[in-house]
Amino acid sequence: MDTSTDKEWLAIVNPNAGNGKGKKDWERISGLFRKESIPIAAKFTERKGHATGFTVDAIGEGFRKIISVGGDGTLNEVVNGALLQDICSPKDITIGMIPVGTGNDWGRMFGIPLVYEGAVKVIKDCKTMLHDVGVIDYYQGNEKQKRYFINIAGLGFEALVVKKTNKQKDKGRSNNAIYFYNLLTSLIAYRNTKAEITIDSKKNTCNVFSINVGNGRYCGGGMRQTPDALPDDGLLDITVIREMGRVEIIRNLKILYDGTILSHPKVDGYRSTNLIVDSETVMYAEADGESLGHTPVEFSVIPAAIRIVYATKLIQ
Image (cartoon, rainbow, N blue to C red):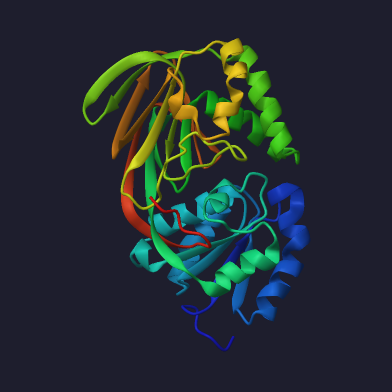
């Protein structure tokens, strides 16, 4: 290796991303990096959480530039590694992405192409910005845990759909059609939950269908549940969908995708640095498409926490 690790990129590759595209396409992707004279080393994950450990280790070895080759879940793990390590400020870490997952929602927001040649060109151009990172404190049984998220976290119905989809991913079945199928079938069993929501110390109790908290605008393969979120304003966008029946949800599915969700009379939108949710019966949580624990849950934000590589910057 004729370059030091602080100049070289480390690619953390999820071989299972995109139904095996990570493994199948890596030779082609690495060839594009060589073609563009981008120095790169690579590590392949073997299980959940592996990318977080790889990131912590890599930073300890001197790497400061990391590429997530996978989906939104792999990126989430890399971000968690960057925030958990204590070698340097997370702001000194630069994170890029080659999207090979099924949803690729974070990359969609920043115009990162799904075509590998275009995604590698984004890495080569290396336009960067400081990106906020969300924090979710939640419970797993009686144990309190913490997770960082870069895009969107959710509670309630959204988390149920994610949980079903992740089970199918673990069996090697995953695409946007499966997510949409799970969305529809989950309506049969799901019940609205009475929850106490605290935003900026103001409490409100209501029956909740779902809650989404975002630095980003897209989730679930293109849904826009926090359609006006900005990744660098130091705030979390919060969308609360209050009690809705199955027929009403199905009739309004298009507003989940077309960016008009906040215009619905049963949808409340907020911007804040802090949100606390407690519920009579537990509501399950997810972050960046990764299934977590349950309520009580607290969301907060770390402004300008980490440097990311983008193609198109969002304008307020």
